[in-house]
Image (cartoon, rainbow, N blue to C red; front, top):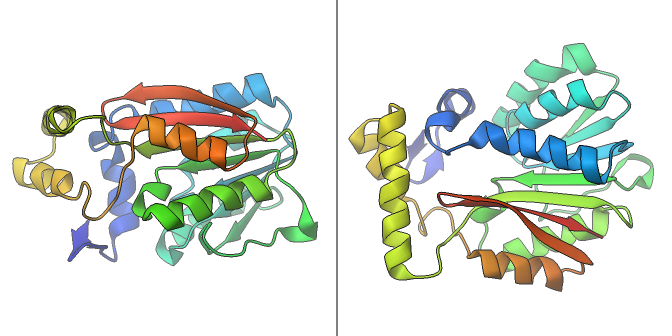
Length: 230
């Protein structure tokens, strides 16, 4: 929940219970990410999940990739605390946690390079300069030949398309159980508290960051997923 544009103290608990009624197909994103990793990098030694939130993606991936070590990165101590409570006791030998963002200097243990880096619904909070910096940091951290996957809120190509997209997204939230007031408050955050860019701009940013393979993985409502190979 937000107050004056900032998450409130109980936001991590709110996030887990409300994400499915806020982002259409959100948990399908995780399934698609895991399926893509199976196809493109089936035995990753190291996977870094930046903007890990409450650790949901890594929790699912841990069950599939039994030989993989995971590093979870997030700037929120509250989110990180929830992720630790979910994962640390059961997977203590396979998970580690860094409280920071990808706009900071991330130094990985032993200077290891991840085979996979994921960034799900986190870079759209950044302005243009910060988004460029965060994307290039992910590129620099990644192992040559490694896989980068990102999902973000996106901006439609036209103003009419944006208006229709907002209405469609709002209708989804109301049908999923949100109140009209809560839905309206969420939609009003578009371009004010988070700053989506178009699919074309995402593709250009990823190419400009140096990735040799850049592909569109998913597009629905006002969210899109992309994958890249370094």
